[in-house]
Image (tube, rainbow, N blue to C red; front, side, top):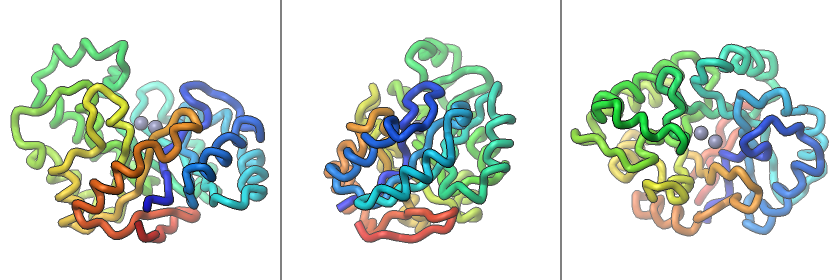
Length: 256
Ligand SMILES: [Zn+2]
Ligand SMILES: [Zn+2]
């Protein structure tokens, strides 16, 4: 059974200030989904709304689930400087920093309104560029794990060349830095209709013994632990025995 969810957005898609009313549904749904350890990882660009005192008050009163304070940092060309500054200032209070590539230059490629821009690219070149961005993000530091590793496939654009050739270098870097990779159910709710990452990448992760986190990328509390039975089957098929959770950036493995 999967008991941790390490990618969640109580703010949804906007800078919503943390209050007990905003956070409480996450405790209620986490309990209903039998989750024991949940990291809130709102987007870096909405950090003004992440009120640490409100979060700690919430965390200390919830008994059924251990809540952790995280953040999803990305390569947003407009906000990432300020977002990294916030992480630096608050690093000791955070449990988990999740890294994501959401942009190719100024293009938010996973946004449905901008999906036409895939036609401007040779897809293999786009995949190369995407994983280059990921390496840059990793080398900036602060990260504990990587989110939705093959997000670039979101609208169904697959490379012509084997995916394994695109991820080799980034996998080495992830291993070298001791980071985790997220196994996410969110892809099943997107046009690609496949978990992140795809099977060939999962196999590499297993072979290289890179630790994993499990995640729904919920933007609404009721999606906590979404499709976890299905994800559990996938992970068992590849032979995974545990998933990582974090306390102040310190990793611990829970059996699945
Ligand atoms: Zn993301
Ligand atoms: Zn996210």
